[in-house]
Image 1 (cartoon, rainbow, N blue to C red):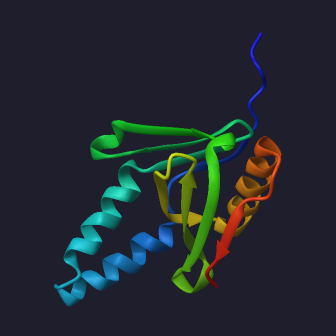
Image 2: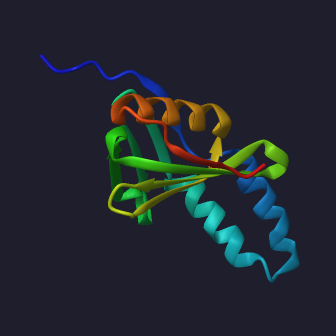
Length: 131
């Protein structure tokens, strides 16, 4: 029998990111940003559980990244969209980074990940808050 895994958040990027970038497309120069937002809206999914962080993305959602909390050493959060959504950058023990863009409820997710990582590592994380 496996260990129970409770889901804290499961879903895609914030819809406001898509709407904002579609509006920017009218300036023509921002069309690449709009295309990026559409691709994120179609294929990017986040799953934050009591055991791991999973990000499914890439072309047609074919790439999956899973990290466990004991590997997390630093988290940076950056509010976007007047604070309605935000970006999280998670630095791992091997110095690699996982960037999560347009995360809804990013403050709550940031707190949850920080708490879980601190519990697993036995020490407080290096956290940077960009507000």
